[in-house]
Image 1 (tube, helix red, strand yellow):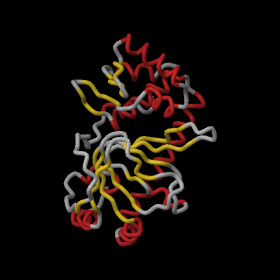
Image 2: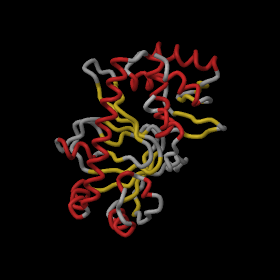
Image 3: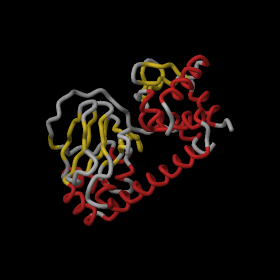
Length: 252
């Protein structure tokens, strides 16, 4: 199973509880930023220059960060929390395109494409982010070619991930598809709570993310709970046996 090794990786970033203030403040700290793909191969001195052009901002849980169709005014690098990226279907139903955890870049794809946001971003947890003015980020990308290269690599990786998920939706049954998505979520947005790793998504959101129905997701998760693979919590799934999930991923 191609994605199995990801379950044993550690992201390096850790989600921590934060206060609820949203007041911006200047941020000149670069500690830990080398863990983000955005700063790969960029010397610490240049990282400091890039970060000094940003402000640090907090977003409360369920706060909308940007809306599809709005012009792109800011580029964000998430440092704490979890953000969901969504679009609305023709019938008004919400589709989750992806989830972003610490170290992920928000808003850059819209700049490269049309200058307007093609999706909506909402904070699933209280979040912190470094925020650049869009024109400032463009200037920095011209000044530091590695920053521009890293941004394009991030966008390419997301496209490949989206293609892979579309293939899974078209070819796999729900149980292995849901298990595979939960394995990915453990790595990128999982939080350790009471000795288990918790994915802070409702069953409805998991259905939106995996292209199935709330009823089907609830049925599959209830079966896994009886097997001791997961335990269901309010607006969250706690994974008790990652190896149990990997076993489901391998089912044909």
